[in-house]
Image 1: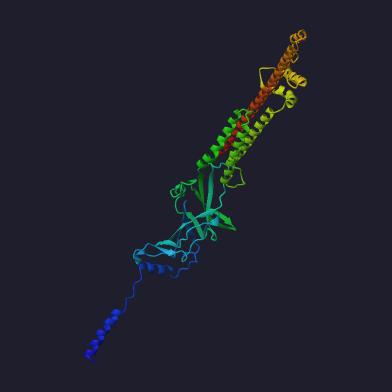
Image 2: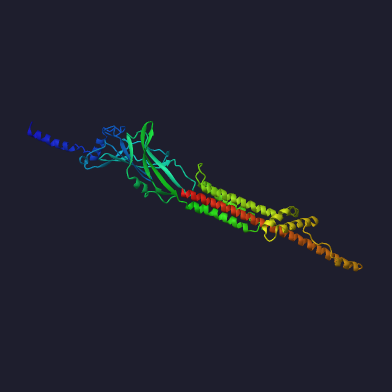
Length: 442
């Protein structure tokens, strides 16, 4: 071969070599991921010795964060061989994930799906899961709206016994119990603490590890006190003061009926606020029920007094013996004998005249004048008109005395019933305070 041809082949080979692209070098992160997952089986528990249990560390922050941490012996590397990488994120579908569940789950909440987990060079896997828990919780509604609730969240492995998967707390129990910084304290509930403890459950001769968190919360009662309790107390106070309205004015029954209707509206609003529970009746429910019974009793007593005031003369006559007894016990100025004599006299007088006894016979001196002046017919007519007018005025006066006497007795009955109502309400209030004190000291 000639030197000219050899030189041309060399020159033509140089551009062809420059056109071939250089194969890119894989990054350290890519090489590490391929190395870790090359022979990894996500269906096998990540331990070199199958008799060694895998410890799952659980951390809980009451807001929406659940930390699940465990050690994977198959995901270990030397950071110096991979450009100092100490932590990477891997797909949770590509590695083994513990089957830790919450026993109180009743519904899948709207939790966001996080498809990745963090893995560090020592094999520690951190699964930070935002989770919304819809769980069953035993409600103690006896002291509503001053109640405190204890909701439990029990974490356990669904299949693996404690010899395979064990559970532990990532942080000290005291630190978890007092960690309320992430809880939204501007709502209806106030987080008190989150105590926790570890225990094992024995099923079919196998022990299963469980970690239970007790979420202690307290309801803020201000809204219910302002919208329910205080208006109810105002209604009861107004109902008591309504007894000072005159029973014969005609407005007491209307006023008490309006109070009962207003209290019924508050009672309906209360039923919308109290959660349905069949275990124990809330104390506030007893309070509203008895208050409504007291309002009905107050209205019934007022109706009874108004009915007494509107008896006719015949009914008053039939009740004169009862009036005697009421007068005896209602007034301390007269003795029992004087009251009985007065009532019997009233009964005899009404038998004769249909009212109280009146001296309706004309005076002798007036009739003697008519005899003397019998010749004067005009004077006789005038005297007869005067006598008739006197008889009419005496009869009206006797009827007014009878009516005023009956009204006075009805007012005494009203005061007696009012005292009975106050005594019953006092007993009711003391019973409520006793029940509340018993619950507070328990």
